[in-house]
Length: 50
Image (cartoon, rainbow, N blue to C red; front, side, top):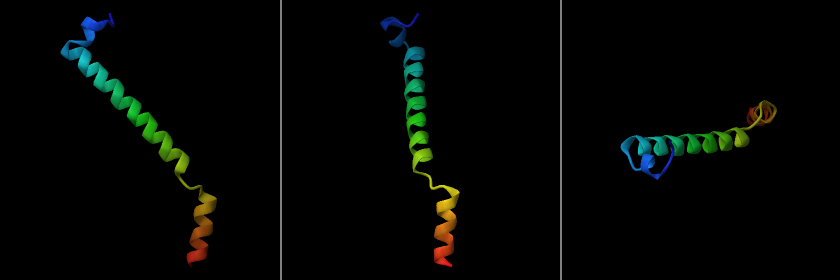
């Protein structure tokens, strides 16, 4: 089913675009989750500013 002939059709190209979009979404959401500050650090920063 998933051979070169399938990916040359419009449906196959849409499937590739969908797979690429999902991969980018997973990579970006993983980076956001890793770099988000924890509640404890955010509370300390708030008390320092006040």
